[in-house]
Image (cartoon, rainbow over all chains, first blue to last red; front, side, top):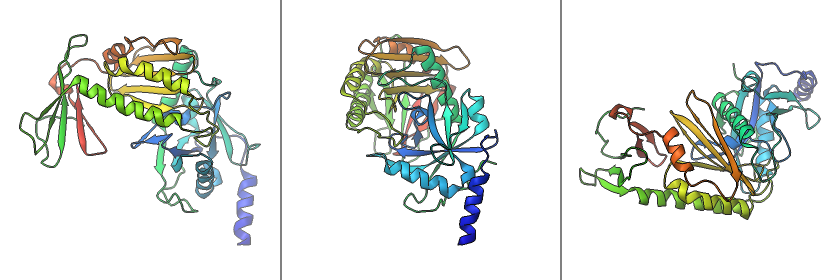
Length: 165
Length: 188
């Protein structure tokens, strides 16, 4: 047990700040807001008001860690339920025109996926910016893989490995 | 998945769409065929289908109205009654001209309607005071429009239909979409 804890701490400390293109980035998905009738909503990649970025996780922290965080996000969302995890390569995010960077000041393993357009409260962006951001979100959706969690109530991730090879 | 013939599995239903050329009056657009129906199937009028879609979208909008703050766990704003009201006003003329909208709430408190096909995509986001819209044919340039949220142009639906769901070119263009319920909808 002690060895396991120490290994986790060691992994955590070893997490480099730069995110390489090959690294797998994870986002927790809640339903029905993000996922309805077997389809992911483009809104899964939309930033909250006043921000240009969305919260994501670094898979290097481990599949179980990502699942635990997903469950926390789900339980913090009234009327919604955590249903699974979405994975995408950091390189695919950058190819779409957005950026991804470590933001461990939130918590270790947290990263920001930034579109560069600050979301306006209760109103859409100007049409040209709206088009650019929506196209980015569509491209991200196309490049990502969603894994429905086979055991949303469980502690450990029991789905396929999240790391994209 | 391509739909190449009239064969319908005995335990399923198929729906074949028959939109006429864009801009012309349409009387019948769907034909539902099932094992317990006559070979000609059940003909559903366009207005009936529009009403069905409109009802479903209005029910969804009502659900959004009841979502509290932080509904996505990432700090989303609630969807206000103003936003829902603007959406409801835009809905009727839209669904009379184009079907298959995916509706979703956005974390900044707005509502999105999106239409996607092999021919292109269109997105409409409606907020408290403004709307933004863009349509992009596959491989083409995006066309954008914005304006006051309570004045979404009624002709937008026809525009979306012309670009994202262009009129029938040939029978070979018939495609199938499978519903979660087991129904199949075909569209040209």
